[in-house]
Image 1: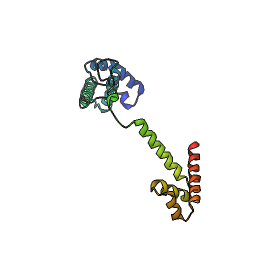
Image 2: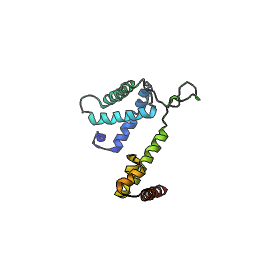
Image 3: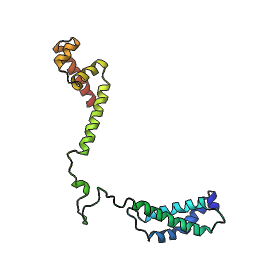
Image 4: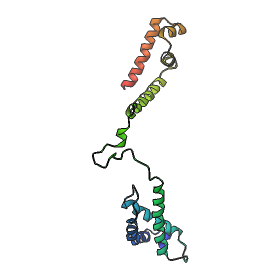
Length: 181
C-alpha cells in the first residue's frame, strides 16, 4: 500500500485499475445535472477516501473499494433526490428547442440592470460628496437631503441669496467635475 503513504504513481495505478468499474457502475445511475465526468470524479474521490480509511486485514482492498464506489454513487443519488423538484429559471418552458425560458415569462416592474446602475450611481454620488469640504458637504446635506430651500439655507447661514446661489453652483461644479473624470 505505497499509495496510502503518498506515492503518486501507485495512486494513479489504483485509479486506473478501478476506472472501468466506475464507468460500469455509473451507467446504472441517472442523476439530474450529473454527467459521466461527474461520476468519474465521484468514483475517484471514493477510491481516494477508501485508500485513506482502509484497515489492512479487515477485508480485501478490492471489495472495500467496490463498496466505497457504490456507496458514493448511492449517496450522491440520495442527496440529489432531495432537490428533485427544483427548477431552473433558465430551463425551457416547453419541450421544443425554441421554447421560452421561465425567466422571460416573469413580469416585473423592476429591471435588474436599472437597479444595479442606480445603486452604482448612488455609491458614486456618496463618494463624490464625501470628498467635499465639511462646509460644502453641509450645503449639499441641507439642500438635497433635508429639502431646505436655498433662501432658508442663506438665512440660516447669514448669507445673501446671491452668495448662497453662487456657493451652490460652485459645489455642483465640483461634483460635476468629479463625474467627468
